[in-house]
Length: 308
Figure 1 (cartoon, rainbow, N blue to C red):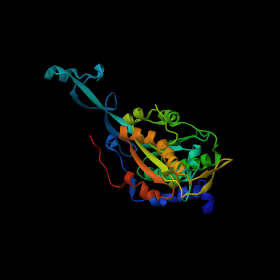
Figure 2 (cartoon, helix red, strand yellow; figure 1 turned 45 degrees about the vertical axis):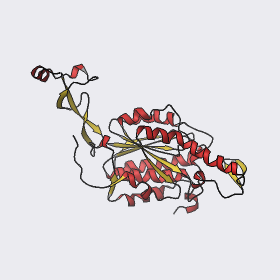
Figure 3 (cartoon, rainbow, N blue to C red; figure 1 turned 90 degrees about the horizontal axis):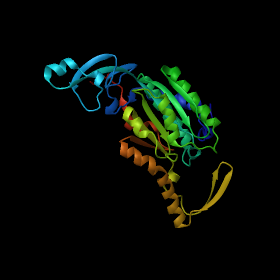
């Protein structure tokens, strides 16, 4: 058995595996953009050449001329174009932030540990729904990738990587979100979903989020700690970051105000972009139960039908 105190600051594989027990009876909900996706491969309406002819409709600016339906055009006197059905792969990619700011927490556990727990729960839920699961790490000098794979074996590959990445990180190395998302684009295929687990401090612009949202169901799990939301009671506190130790006087009202504003500003860039792009954001505190916090992403498991 792993030590609970150690589990608060480092990712423990047995704890991630145990979260499989909480995946029964639920699945990951989907946005309207990906409602047509089913387990394994599925058919969805997609402009361009695919597997089978779907239907003809009135030509719209931007449609490819080579897909014109000349027979319907001649019969109706109005330009029509063909739509095809394309098989799209159902899979999930977890992008996990390992930047130094994630190696922090004052309630129950570090943000990095909570992010791994949330990623593990999402992976188990996705696997139970028939999804293949992969992962990408960024920050902390880690640039690891686990390509999506199905079943329990696929999830275990992701969980082992989460443990290994956490133990191998370099707290002096920072990677911006833009670079991580550019890497994610190379792993994502049409129909795949992307879940970003981060505290948002690494967010920068411009980044590929607008392009990703146009093709994928994107969700952000935003990690938070209580001390980032409000300054501690007045007093002098010793803060540690790596080998650096600093005394901060929270008896000064200006320090207390600047403390809260700095953390809020660090998240504001990512939150603002998510609002602009209508990306779902789930806020997850370090002492929260991931099952409850992630409830907006969960749906009771039930048979589903293709939505045309």
